[in-house]
Image (cartoon, rainbow, N blue to C red; front, side):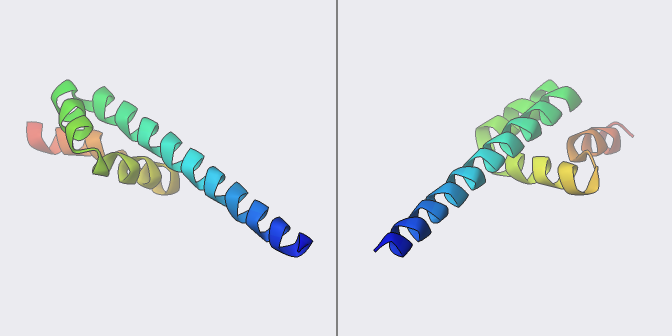
Amino acid sequence: MEALFAAGALAALLYIVLVVVLLAAWIHGLVLAFRANIFLGILCLLVQVPLVLIGIIYWIFGFDIPAALVRALRN
């Protein structure tokens, strides 16, 4: 019985860590989008899905997608 409780507690802890990481990636993606362009930030805020991906890609590869998009659209 104690093993089931420990497994459930570990699963709950991993879920909480996942939620915190995704929330941090969402906030970082939002900051990057607003830093690149205010209109892009508003668009990403309305759509919401790309923000997590923007944050995670920036953490893993160091590539700022919103800044690259704004640079590409200005040229």
